[in-house]
Length: 276
Image 1 (cartoon, rainbow, N blue to C red):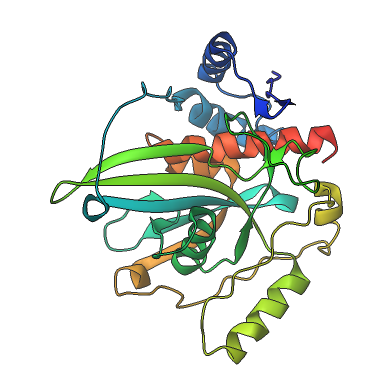
Image 2 (tube, rainbow, N blue to C red):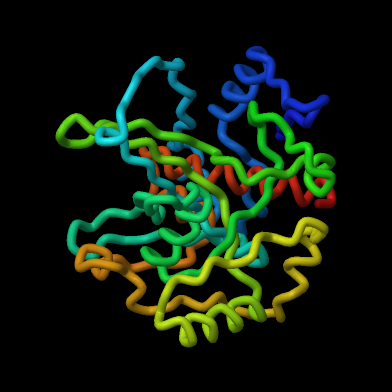
């Protein structure tokens, strides 16, 4: 099954309502090409997970107003290990549920950086946002370095959730990747020299393809999971695992996070197919 992705035309990415409806209808069938072909002994479980996953449609636009005292901005992230087609999933050891790392952004922090930081704090895996081929409605930057690229680091899903005391929580879901070995080492050494402060990783190189990125890892390389990165007692209860995509979707079934993984990996595959 193939999927269309709207590409820049002029300064905007145009998305027709018909195209969006067709994409949603196709997604309801789920994606038989989303994951690498399963081995025969695993095919039954994978089909069970895929068939039971419902891809939620977007809600209707809303009009609402919140002052700064009643608004919370947060970000979450699906962290992929590209070479093994796995994704980081967290588990709450006391309350016994699976989730993707997420949380409130710090004051003055942009949402993308907040997603990377929360991903590291809650899972222990360093990560950076991955530019992907994604349908969106934002204008392209006029900078010469970015204007020609169809790959963006925009949220794949956004959630609006009420919080106690009449506060509104807005949560942006991003797609990221684990870091290559050399960058992982340099940031780990940097953390030591800066008294444990979180080190923001440099962005994914603009001219690098996914094939070139994956070639930076030797066969069998396992991304580093740092211990005790949680910032409070609650986060110290979190466990994290790099799971095969179909297993992760199964554990997240019934939540928007299942489609963050599905839509995110679909966009990764689309970029790779494009040669980016």
